[in-house]
Length: 189
Image (tube, rainbow, N blue to C red; front, side, top):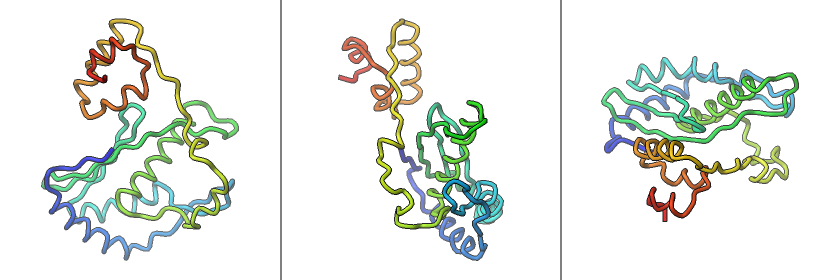
């Protein structure tokens, strides 16, 4: 989901200046994926390079977790902002990692890509998806089973969450298996 302040003219002017200065930064791919044998920009490298340029142009980037989403926002000192959300999931398949390490890897990976998308930075070698082979979208997205809302307390929590997140109504049916009565209560019918 994408959001922005009513006006973003000052933010865009600063972002144009940021992009001009960033081109001079000479950012080099500093990490290697041993599995795919490709080089990429590490999150640390990106952050250490962009933070001073963002600050010099009155911009700041903020990334925060909101449930199963990573929220990335670019703020201008005027209060103008652009923001996007993306779902993330733990990385799996690495031998010797525990659940927390897999979650951390998923968050780092999501942060790198969300940050790069927000600022228009290429983080990987563009091979026109040749390295993806025959990966299907369904293989990348692991659907989670929808949770039943069984108790009045669970329903109340869901209602409270919706009151605080009215723009996320579409996510409710994606994550919860609701009865017709529950949908009517939430105005989803």
